[in-house]
Amino acid sequence: MTHVPTRTCAGCGRKAPQSELLRFAARDGRLVQARPGSPGRGVYTCRRLLCFERARERRAFARTLRATVAVDPELARLYTGADG
Image (cartoon, rainbow, N blue to C red):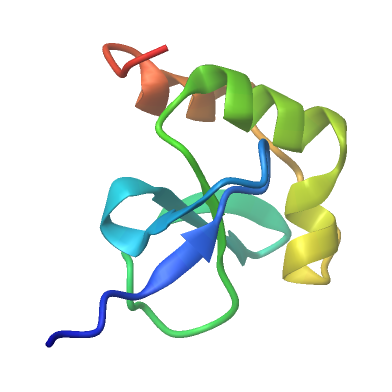
C-alpha cells in the first residue's frame, strides 16, 4: 500500500491528496505558486477560486507560512478554468 500525502486547504479546511491542491510559498515577502515537494514551508488551497479568496481574506496564507506576505490578486489567474 502506497502512502498518499494529504494536505489541508487554507480556504475551506478540507483535507485532500496533495496532488489535488495548489501549493504556495513565500518568496521575498510575496506569495508565489510553488511546486509540490519543493523545499520550505508551503500552504495549500483547493483548485477553487473561492478557497483562494477565502484564504486571502482570512490572512491564512501569512498565518500558515508564519511570514508577512503580499498576495498578488493576479494569482487568481491560476484558478480560471478550474471547477467551482
